[in-house]
Length: 640
View 1 (cartoon, rainbow, N blue to C red):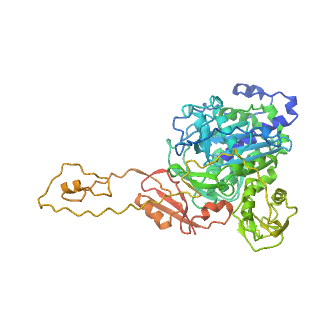
View 2 (cartoon, one colour; view 1 turned 60 degrees about the vertical axis):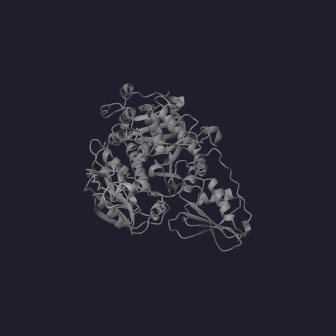
View 3 (cartoon, one colour; view 1 turned 90 degrees about the vertical axis):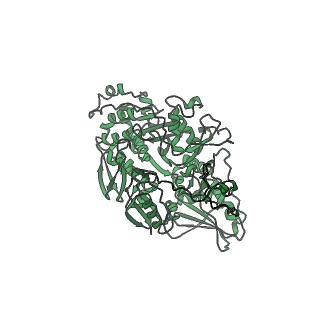
C-alpha cells in the first residue's frame, strides 16, 4: 500500500524536482506554499471548491507499534558517514525518500511499512523508483555511535517520538528530525546521498484520488481478500471481504486504497504477494498520472496542494499552483524506471527476535555491499540496473578447474549482479552465454561483457521459461579468469539479533532432557504422614530424598482448568500440513471456513512459497497474530 502512496506523491507533487530543470526556475522565484496563501495565489485559475481543512495530525502516542524491541549491537563501531554526491559519478543527480504511514487513528501511526527512494536525473529527465520492504532488518544510529537493530519501518516512527532514544544527534530532533533520521538510515544502507524526504498518510491518499474525481484502473487479475473494516481497530476491529473483478474499473479514494493495500487474499494466492501488490500500486500510479494530465486535470492542483499542506511532511519547498501548472507539459516527457528489493533478488527471509518475520540481504555475509553496488548502478544507469534486479546470472564451470565459477560468482555479486549458485558442466573449449530472457536482458549482457573483460561473448538463446536466467558457461579459454571487484568497507550488516537466516518461521529444536537417575524407594510404614511443606510444582530431573520421605503419594492435586477466554490469537499456520493446521484451529475453538488448493509457479518471486511442501498451508485469512472471538472462521490456501 505505501508504495502507492509514494507514487501518488511522485505524480501529484513529483513536478517539484523538475522545477529546477526547466526555464520556470529562471522565470519565477520559488514561493513556499502555506494554507493561508493558497487561495490568494490560485484566484487566477478556475478551481473547484477546496476541501474543508482537516485537523492537524496528532503527535504519535507512546506506543510506537513496533513488532519487537530493538536489539543493541554491543560491539557496534561508529556509524559510517552518510554518503555525499562527491563520492558518485553524475553529481547533477539527486534523490529523495518517499514515506507512507497510517497517520492519526492507526496503531503504529508513523510506522512506514515500506519506503521508496526516487533518484532524479535532471540531464536525462528520468526518475528511478526503488522500493524497500518494511520488514528489512537494519541498524539504527540515533547517537551516531550505537547501532540498535530493528525493522526499517520503525526508523521514522521512533524518531517522531522524542521520548524514544532521547540521546540523539541534533539533526534528528525537531520537526524535521524524523525525516532526517529516515533519510540517513536509508542512505547508509544503499550507499547513495538522499537530500529530501516527503511523507503522506492514508487520508491524504484518499483525498488526492477523490480530488481528481477518481481514477480508472484496468484490473488484470481478479481476487477477493479480507480487509479491515476500519483503519482504527479501536473503532471497529472486524474484517470485511473486498472483491475486484478483472477489467476497467473506476475507483474513488476508498476503493483505490483497498485495491492498493489488500493482502489477505482468499481465492487468488498470487495477488497476496508483495510482487502483486507492487504491480497494483504501479497501476494506481499510472492511472493517477493519466487523470491528472488529461484536459482539465490541472484544475485540481489547488485542491491537491491544499491536501498536501494537511497530510504531507517534507523538508522540500513546494512550488505554487502556477509554477506546477507550467511544469505539466515538461513532466509528460519524463521517463520513469521502477524496481524493488525483494526476496526474489537481493533479500531472503529470516527469523528475528521473538520469532518475528524479517528480511535481510541474501549475500553469504548478509551485508548490504551487493545491494549498495546495485543501487549505485541505478544511480548511473537506471535502464540497465532495473533489468539487473530481475535477471539472475548462473556461472557454469566448464573449465575443468575447480573453484573458477565460485570465484567469478562472488566477484559479480560484489559488483551488484543478482547471482545464483554456481554449477559445474561438461568441459568445453569456448566461453559462451545462454540467454533465457528472450533478449530482454541485452543491456545486462552488454554490461556483463565489459565487467568480465573477456571481449565479445557468443550468445545463444535458451528456453524462455520465465526464469530470467543468464547462464555464463566458462570454457577452458577462461580458466584463469580473474574479475577484480572492490570491497565496500562501509557497507552495514544485518546479522545482529537474527535467530535463523533463510527460514521463517523457525522453531528451535527442543533438547531432550537427560533421563532422571533411578532412586531406590524408601521402605515406609503404612501409616499416612501429612506434610506441611509446600509441594514444588516445578519438574526436577533429580529426585529429592527429603521430599520422598515426607510424602505419601507422588500424585499431584488436580489443577482446575482456567476459564476459556472470549478471544484467541490466530496462530501462524503457514507451512503446516493441512491436517495439523485444522487440528491447531480446533484446539483454539476456531473453525475452517473454506480451503483453496493452488499451484505455485516456479518463478523467482515465488521462491519462499516453493519451499513450502505440497499439502501444506500457503496462506491464511485472517492474518496470524490477530485477536478474534472463539468460533471465528479461518480461510486456508493449500499448495497442490
